[in-house]
Length: 406
Image 1 (cartoon, rainbow, N blue to C red):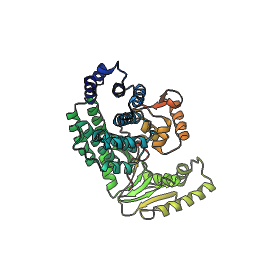
Image 2: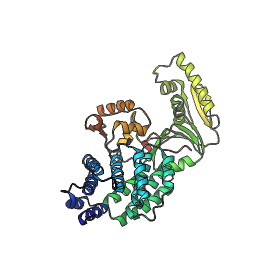
Image 3: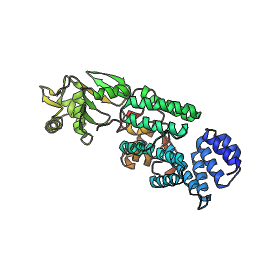
Image 4: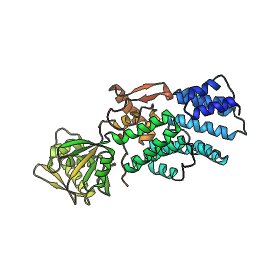
């Protein structure tokens, strides 16, 4: 490797893409193409970066397996940043194995961090945690240790372990300081915002207030009876009843929870559960059936009793009933939450992250665009969607599956 390539690589490692381009911008050999691709990615030109990395991978000879593997890892990172979540995990795993086989442990670990971050984006937290468990960041340089601690913090936040998340972010902050890369420092600061901005909304006794992530954690650990509208579950401490697949029952449970300790008129319950403005006898009959099903589902946590005008919720072994809701509730709030991270998403990536069909996501995007809440650029498969962040709120608990139920 010649001196210019070495100097450009060091510049990239230090977070100086312009310095790297000064040394290799006019070269077209495989190492220069790879470094130019990484530099363009750091500068934000992801399309050009991907093209350069693919050219570099083709230009490397058959004996340069490590160099090709590094190109695959770099391309996977670009795909992650551009929220192209459909990239081949098998190709990345093969590249990681090649790097480990040839002793490049730092880049092998980076490949694994990319896969963990992808798993977090699509809500597969258990897999992300297992994948991270075997990695020891101690021998790695500061930039890699920062990446490791950011992933650890991300998992802890989604598990509602805020003390562990703060400890990981403190370690990430120290490592980023030693790395002296401004982009890493900014990423750590952005992660801190999740802990220090409202993450959910508490509705109780006719009033409501915003909660930080620590307060959400404390609430779910308390003995309060919680109707959790973030995950569509009803819980008290460790006892959890999921109503995620029973939307009518959850609508009834939420209405009763918001009215506690009072009751809810039958007409109100019919409107909340069935969307009917005027309740007739058939609606009342159906309401009785659904209330019976709700009683059966909540029998270990609460009772639902009839009153003169409707129904009331009576918790067992709990002194209060509260509703935990998203900070901002919107018909397409889950889509908005993902888009509010400031990155550009494809509809297919949104569908993968939300666990729904691409057609459903496209309908939501069309509605949000008509309301002026999102915008798109590109054509066909290259179309990407973006939305401004929700001011004053973290996006973590806006997602459809942010809170642990196990």
